Length: 77
Length: 377
Image (cartoon, rainbow over all chains, first blue to last red; front, top):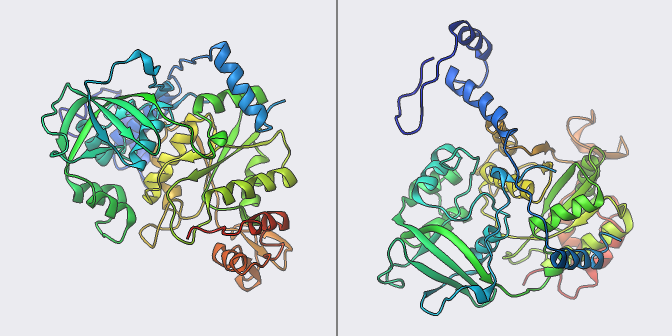
């Protein structure tokens, strides 16, 4: 696949030629200006669903404090 | 519950007794920058851990993304006058302070750099016109920037802080309420019927509504912050199910960057734990610098944003339909439409009059009129 040449910001990835041809047909008349912009869009969408969350819990004291605040606002019983 | 932006909710706060600051050079920052410090330290701006360094700034300007490819559209910058921080260098730490906020926060300086104001204005605001308030702010910035992580030591409680929940707290609240899908509504005004219609239309498809007024610096003639909060309290009390709507304030300055700011607003609400975000006509716009639906169109550039925008057009009341409509659902002539004019409502309230009930709830109007001075003077 052809890529913009910018050593710092872009890299070259190989995909099968028939797939590249299919994508080129698919993006005709859409807002995508290149094969690269389409592949970037799809990969960003896919990879964003894989981010891992580190869910940090409250300490018991903090949880009590937060619950008291939320009760005062009438948001929890 | 959606993951925080960038995958991790940032907390940059330490207990004040655990860090020695007496040898640090102090730097008094203004209110807007203090709000940025608090928003970074409480995770509202996750994944930012501090003020942007130059590589991130350049990437935000050109790509609308941080240098690690995370979507980010509004630069969070700390400018300074080199004469006031004489002798500081990269690798140093300084103490950021603000009297009004009782703020004390350490900044570990990773980079000291300059920036191109014209380029920043053009790319972020799409104009170099000084009449644009965001552009004017850029030109008023000092010439040098400090990039680096911040660590909050302390800040004092301020008015309305009972409504000021951090992302960690709102995420806890949403879990307690058993909400999976939450829609965020941003506002800077008391609610009229059009706002209520938008909120309830969105709420129909999710579990909960997160009303999130922006509180802070206002123009003369704007509604006062306490008026906005009281009017929403009244609306929620009389017209919302108790287990379906909550309100929390957001202290941040409006940049009026239109489409770019709409993305920024969505990111903040994602960090609060919202799955959906309401984007109206000319969101975060000012004057005629942006097209009415530019703030809708920009979302197509971000397949990885991980918060669903709900696009709303202008609503009005159609006399023939006898209901609230927009141009996608009503076939009647605009002459049959009454617009929910914020200007008209303000004029009536300024004269001490209750607006018609098809524009604003009577209870909301009465709440506003209980204030001797509901507008910023």
